[in-house]
Length: 113
Length: 112
Image 1 (spheres, rainbow over the protein chains, first blue to last red):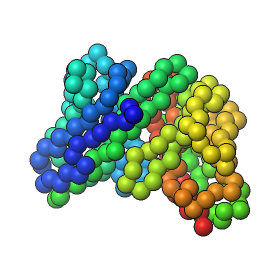
Image 2: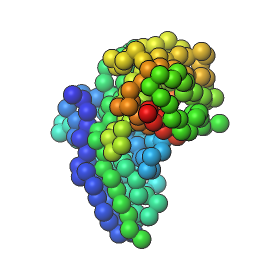
Image 3: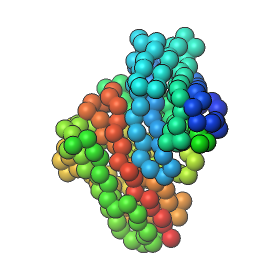
Image 4: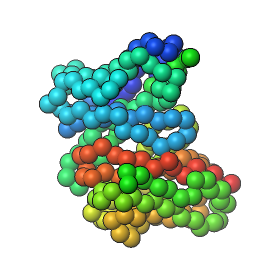
């Protein structure tokens, strides 16, 4: 299965601390994406990193990609209570008319005020 | 308008009912998706429409029937569902296949 695997499954930190989540996958990809989901709601796209990129930043978010290890990490700096959510990595598979995203199991992040 | 809308927000239906879920986007996106998500699980892809044509059906039971009337609308017709079909149904769209996906808030479906 191409499904990504996030690590850890759950993470609890204090406001102001940094949070790091990891994602591993099994086969070659075109790109890897990270999404956030607040409880019971739709997903929000955070960052897309292409297979030829190694690092990408967006505000307090930093994503790295190591294609040799088939792994990615998401770092959230100076966390806030509002960052409490589930975070999913998503990898692509197939091409052309068969392109689709497969989501990992997710990391539940709790930021305590 | 960078929003994907879904109606209804909540739906309770019996196993003999026929209902439809609706999804709409006005971002000019040409790919649209249906996902099913159970509690504490990741979204699972059900269907992909690309340029209004069904391109992927992830072996979804025929009691789920997708429809794409035009480039802005995506429907999911439901008939003779089972209690295990109760879940959050998410619609998403993207400009092209390889781009980031924009998700709607979902329809919480309960089958009794």
